[in-house]
Image 1 (cartoon, rainbow, N blue to C red):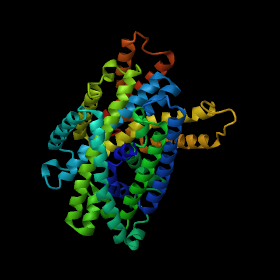
Image 2: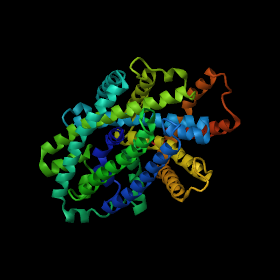
Image 3: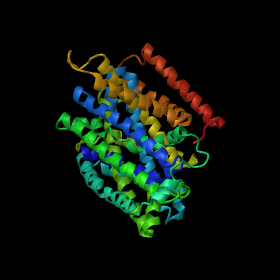
Image 4: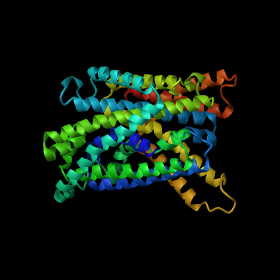
Length: 460
């Protein structure tokens, strides 16, 4: 199960870290950013570990925690948001593959051309065909791919450590000109850190397949510790290789540009191969987890019943199909964006923060209300961890900026159609009075988002 967590987190993001950080901040800001991101994500990982142990009856992690704590409608939003973020995140993988191959095939450009959409679409549906052959077979493939994709990343870090130039690192200590205060620089990196840490909850999301509940918590912590060390190392050693302006101007995958500067063209080729393996493995893991969320939500009555069906191989084919369809739609949308990769990973981070925030808030509620706690059991540690996780996710929503928040509303509000379909199937009233308030808020946010996009106040 730890391999599933690592496999879902080590995907496209790690290969883009040098350029994404250098475009926003220097080495000083990167240290602060990773300290904040690492601490906050650790608190979130501890929250998922605590919830897995204290509420073993809740499966599919993120979705069920929100529902148990705050009702069916917010639980539905949590399930949909987590699922949608996985679909959008899968698009970033194909965009980055196309951008990588664009160095040899000009028609693919930077991953934002019509040819990219055609090639990526073929990949989407080919992957659908593989995954629907069965969850166990796909998970076995993911374990092999996870090991294979770590090799070029570790090679990159080792070579960069030996080539590390302290003077270059010192020159890169401050941020780029015009980047603003240190806090502004750190804010600029936050969605990148959210994106690379997506999947820290992977063991909880897939917990119905765990043999023991303790395995869920252990897998979460082992996965987090491993990838945090890897991500921070990739970022920081890059500041000691190339000047900041050159790092910020690198083509994605920027890790390849850094290694190529050290060892020649074979370095870029090695990273390109590693990226393709890594991305395909992460895509597989995220497709499995996304379909799992839809499956469990449907079986709990919070999504239309057809999404809860599986075939003879235990593959949730309708959920997998809808996952692929949404990814296809977002892939087409990238043609209208200024930077396909940045748009996709930014939206991914924004969408998933709502489920994360609700899970952290539910943990706070458990502690405050003493649910699952013995009368004489100390709660100081769990309360502190839960509050820090809640503060961190709230700050990340603010740090992400208005654009992705409004676009997130545009994605969330129409999804209510699925909630209504589920209620109609059960012969229930569509919305309670409290749910009508939440519906009005989401629709208002979506209307503002559409107006802002049409008027040009925000751009993709």
